[in-house]
Image (cartoon, rainbow, N blue to C red; front, side):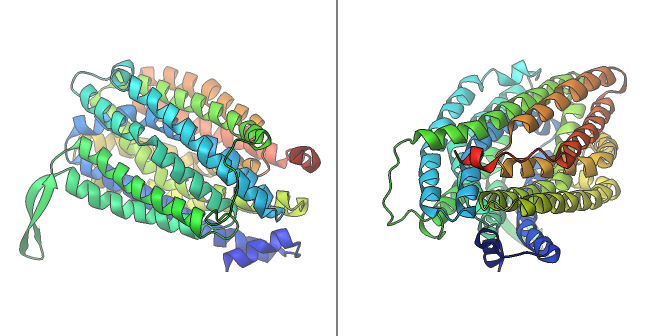
Length: 472
């Protein structure tokens, strides 16, 4: 069982290379499946909205990068607590792990409500700031408002899922992620389209529907997130042995040491995500003047490309857990070996996914939109991006390794410098002569550069902080 194997890290049991590899695959597989199910949900969402026309697709694509900014900031804040839990569990200090969980719950809620309030305040003007025209701006504003209002729910789901993964329980958050996808599809099917008759195996069936269009897509996803967040929090609070709070007394009052450590880990990640998403928003402003077709193709291609890189994030989650627990247990030999194993696995998997995306891009775009011009442009830019996937994997998983030891400042600076110094200037220059294709060529070159500098940092042996200094 995965939990029995991962307990060998904190128990000091010797682990052969084959056992380490097996444990890595065991933890990474459900995480990858969860990420893939999440992407499947996005595919279905995009294809449903795509049936409403180019304007509906563009209205969502216009604000998608800004939503990632808000989601990512909240996710980064929860990481500061979940990494501490991995270290405490690795050291078999379960009481302290529960204390960190309590602090995390309060901090995550307070922070997410504040971020949500900012989002609500800017929702009316945001599409206009991003260069949206009068046809798509009202729908964009409404879509953004619904999503940003639900940020506290999503943040609690991030926190609970991160806590479970960091104690080695990848299975439960992965299964709940799959459930969220299923619920999202069901809710969207009922909320996006009006009531209609559909033919199944020669039988006419009346299908009820709310006919809410873009608003229905937002509400469907938010409802699915609400159910998942409730179940995720219940499992952490009542069932997970190392973290269970039910029936166990403890204080929710802020503890300076825990909050300070969380801020040390999360602050660079939060700032880094903000500036990276700021750059992605800047890319959106570069794409917006290229027209509705370019906006829609860019949005669909971003969703389609995530089929390749989300498995990398699943392996990155496993890397954070394995490296974090090994670091907490003081087993530096395992820290390095798990780092190399997870990065190698991530690059192999995403290389295969890149090849698959190159081959399947016509089918993927055909599924997502019936508009020929959008589909053809989407195919071209997806095939450009396929070349970057192995090095993108290196950046994603190596970042997960660095998070596991609580080293986030320099990696954050590396991400920031790569996207602002390489991607943005190139995108601006190439878009002027090559349109959307130029933007994606810039993205491809930047991801190759980013993966290279992360691998150089990984091979450099001074990336692991002093254990004594970190614990004090």
